[in-house]
Length: 166
Image (cartoon, rainbow, N blue to C red; front, side):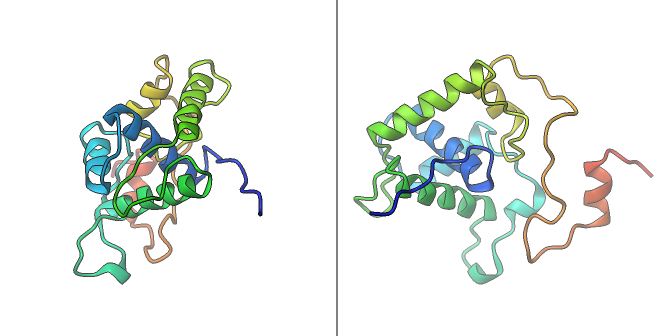
């Protein structure tokens, strides 16, 4: 059996996986994708930008925001690492390893062993959830300008990102 590498918490999928694991833990049990994404949205844990709300071109007609798909990719990362079970369709349940992993990650973030600043998909609210002493600062990583391969950055988006007013 091929060994699966550890979850890289600051990678795109890793950031989504950590948000998802925390949501499932807070919801206390098995959840559906909808319950997980609603919880994440209502708690402002994902740093949603306008392009995150647009469906992927391959999913025209489904109207599912891109960030929902990103959370699903985070789930896949967790399933590969036995952090979330894959027993039933649309039943997202954390394994014991998953509970241990999110507890360990949160403890490391609280102690500053894992800085939250590199996690550009984590909102300030989620960063504070992971490390209660977090305060936004200039060292926080910004999303790459070209985040979605099928979308070019807009002038307005670039100006907003760098706090430039005209």
